[in-house]
Amino acid sequence: ECFAAEDHERSVADAYLTWGWDDPDDPRVLPVGQFKAQKPLGVDHSLAEDLLLVVEGVPRFNHRTDSIGLAHHWSEYFEDLCGFAGELPDRLRKALLVRLPVTDQGRGEADLWQERLPEVRLDHGGMPMDHLISGTRLYVATYNSTTYLQTFTMDVPTVCFWNPDRWRVRSDADPYFRQMVDAGILHHDFASAARHVSSIWDDVHAWWRSDEVVEARLAATRRFSHLPEDIRGEVAAALEGVLGPGWPDGGGSLGFARGS
Image 1 (cartoon, one colour):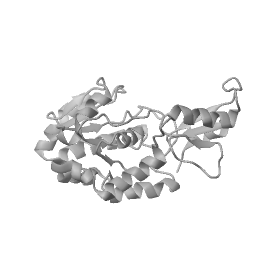
Image 2 (tube, rainbow, N blue to C red; image 1 turned 180 degrees about the vertical axis):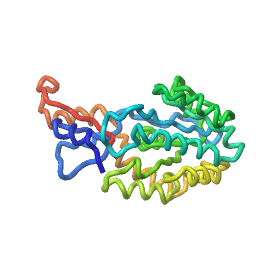
Image 3 (cartoon, rainbow, N blue to C red; image 1 turned 30 degrees about the vertical axis):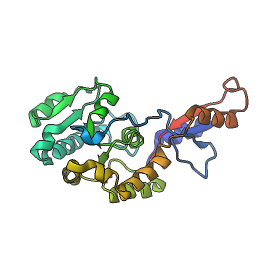
C-alpha cells in the first residue's frame, strides 16, 4: 500500500476530515461525512434505458506515487474497457453510454472508441452527471474513486470493476471491498463484470434490492460516504473542536479525504 499524498496531508494538517472513516491511532482524522451530499434524484432507474460506463481521466505523465492506476497503465486500462464492452451482448452494447474524461490528455480516446466499437455511444464529458444518471438503469464504475460512492448514496444500481493490482486498498478497508465482491457489486476483471451485468440487466432492481447487495452497499456507505443530516454542522463542530471557538480567525490547517 502506498498513499504518499495522504501521508503528507495528514502530517501537516491539524484536522483531516473524511467522508466517514476514522483512525484510532490518529485523533486528527475526523469522520464528518460526504461533503457533496449526493442524494437520490427521485427517478425510477429500473425504467431507464442506458448502461452508463464512466472512464477515468488517467494523466499522460506520472505526477504522484500512490497505489492507483498510473500513466503507464493506461493502455491496459483502455483494453479492459473495450473488453468489457465487447463481452456484452449486442442489445446491451447498444444501450451502453461511455462517459469520456473532460480532458483527453492528447490520446484521442473518442477516435479510439469509434475505431474499436463504433456502435457504442460516447459522451465527451460535457453533459452534467445528474442528467446522465437520471437516464441510467445501471452505472458502471471502472476505477476506485469518488464516483461509485456517490452513486451508492444516490441509490443508483452500480457495478464496479478494476484491476486490484493497480487499485490497492488499505488493510482496514479490505473487508468492505470483499463484501462488495461477494455481493457482485465489485469485480476484478472485465469479463466477470460483463457477465454479471448481462445476467441482471432485465431486473436490475431485484438484484440491487437483494439483502446481500443492500448490506454490502450500506456498509461501504457508512464507512466511506456517510450522509449526515447536517454536513455543515458536522464540519463546523469538527473544526471548532480542533481549532477552538472563533475559527477561522484562529488559523490552523486542514486536510480533506475520501480515503478508501
